Image (tube, rainbow, N blue to C red; front, side, top):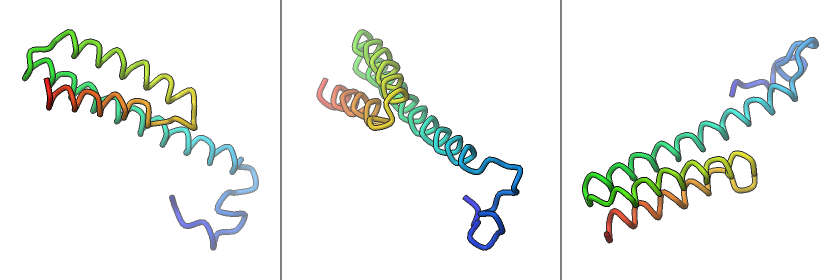
Length: 97
């Protein structure tokens, strides 16, 4: 973010709601992290299906990554770790299948 230490009012004008902006920014970053992890899971699932011809595992990986992304989005303490765990499982399936 921009350097706001030297700006008056913490970088926000008096008619702006600074804490609401910070919460929105934090939510956007969390959404972008989770979305990126889900897309990586999709790519890994396509790799499992395409390389190993395990399309049922691939479909289950896509479904699990969507569910894990929803859980991560609803629980800030879990966050990106839920879809990342599915990504690790898909990577293991790609290596050992």
